[in-house]
Length: 287
Image (cartoon, rainbow, N blue to C red; front, side):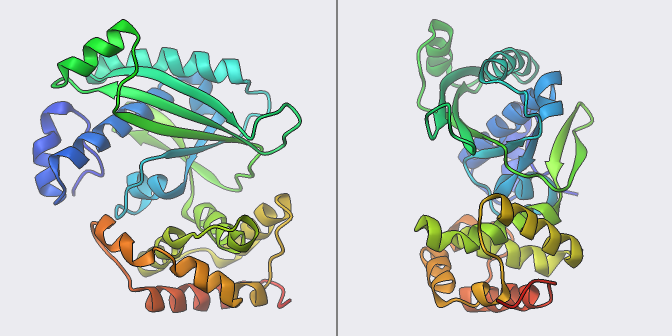
């Protein structure tokens, strides 16, 4: 069975060949693993935040399409900004000693800004240098920023309906959203396209690929979708999913995803029909 990520610098070349990716992409994957290992190795962070989104699918459930960001949701309402900063800094130092990667917390920013905001995201940038990058390692030792980074996002007050705990190579435990929870969040994101004036082509592909490979609990997906949507004042209905703008926005940039998938790419029309057929089976209001 192929590993979903390299866990040591020495195995990067072999892993890249086995997974049919470039050595550079394998190095990025290793750096991401190092950050995940840091979070899993922190008592505060591992008990307070849940790994979600496209990279959670790719690292844990369905290796197919890697993204740059590592996305998390907090399940601890008392988790403070300072506590996150302190915990990340200490855990990165520990993970650096374990993996040989030099890490540096380069940016920590709240979006949107203001103490009156309910749904906020901490936008974090973690600079890194692998063992063969002596120049960047020296910069990190001096406290300077480096070009290679792992973006990390931690959302506060987002609803996590279902999660499980996995081991990163039997070393540390990490909380991860289940496939049903991830699909529900991606369906909500598709509905929010018009509200946010964005395109979520990646969510259309990810859901379609999941449906090809896994039998989902439809009752759970419908329940989680409505709970997540209600928290954001997003109206959920079967009619809303059939809206032409949802389809048009999800198609923007979709074909470009083909070059970013390793296992399975589903053409848009096929993916769209598959997702809509699945939605039609969910216990959702018509209008």
